[in-house]
Length: 537
Ligand code: ADP
Ligand code: ADP
Ligand code: MG
Image (cartoon, rainbow, N blue to C red):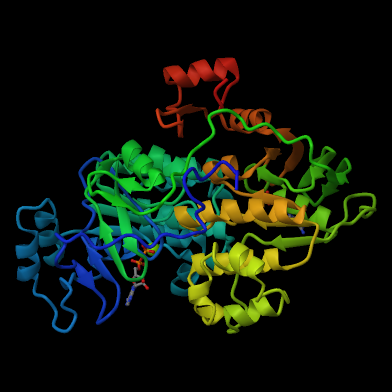
């Protein structure tokens, strides 16, 4: 299907072609008999940010747990613990030898930002201020608070924070520690692009004096943040191989290509490609719904919406900072909230996936989806929802046992299972890996086209927004005070407006992939003066 994403093959025909390389005889770690085995390990490096890039279930968190001393690698011999001496022997002559010696002697202090931040309120009660003060061993708290804009929430209870607030507090708490090594397992979920870049810049500051290792699925951010990346490949939940370090540009490009030349491994049968020029917006589409000019005032926030039209079969991207009124806009369209001066006349049927998804029961995934749709057994549903969202393996799992990424995919499926004219998904990429994000693009485009409905996607992953949207609505103003919804615009016009608000320009590398320019670099200044922030002319 010509959606411009896959060159060679439809990604829905998932590949199963990666075999364990023969030279990798022994795993670094195996959890138990017939369980996941990890091969290789990433290497923290002085003065650098080392990234780990790979699908979920490939051993990224396991690697971080080994490097941070939380798990002692057992060399695959789970029945008897391998001694440290055996571990050293295995890593003799490698760059990890010294590192593991220090870890074994507990001579290394590490600071860790865990992947799932929802655990934090269970482990800590008290205010943001009391948590951060306790962790401020470097005496840099004021700087962190300023850059991550935490000052207004310092006296709030940890248990009352939103996901985006908790994420920034967790990042600050990790970076405030005095440690020899810093490990951060995903920094972007629930953060807007301003906050993502602020966090990335703070991490780069730390890396000037201490090695940092990160896991991250927002590739534009990973690209500006990391110096080198290790790629994880294999069969999720079965085995994972962590490659040696690659330069960040090349590593990301190999990943998108689906082929690792050094390792001679193809792990995806199609390449992910970017369109260099802004895609034309399809004016042959028929109107679905015209939303009027409207305002909505809360105390003290006020949203102003310029009128616009949503078309049948299109995916609209919604971009802007957090707290600017994106969810409020969705609620006005859905009729959940009325604009000032009375409800919208022409209410359309909306299906809405909120930003924060919670497991509210122990029902299985299959039971949950069957209770929403009666087409569960149809081949359309299986092929367009269950398979691309990789739900088959977890159909019998109770909702309250799912990981963040699994729950997200179920919530997306639930949203698409409802009958509606307009589907709104608020940050569907949170906790999804790059493969799952690419599949999400396909699922939502097919859904819009196939059902002749509208799909609105609020997201902060700029690559995802670029790939998924036909047009975009840009929200700007002052978060928490006043927001204005402008558009829908064509991609070029919308991205230029959005990125000029942000003050960020992108260049293209040889492969056509957009990369964030260094502020005040030659290209940055040139593109800004021309008003071309994202697409080439
Ligand atoms: P990633 O971070 O790449 O998503 P993880 O390292 O979290 O991957 O997990 C890799 C595999 O190891 C998964 O299949 C996971 O279920 C399994 N696993 C993780 N922790 C444990 C554990 N403590 N016991 C058994 N299996 C585990
Ligand atoms: P976004 O989705 O862009 O992050 P929201 O639409 O959720 O932003 O919120 C915009 C602003 O409106 C925020 O400052 C929020 O606190 C405020 N707000 C949202 N809903 C309500 C409400 N029901 N009552 C009062 N203020 C609200
Ligand atoms: Mg993980």
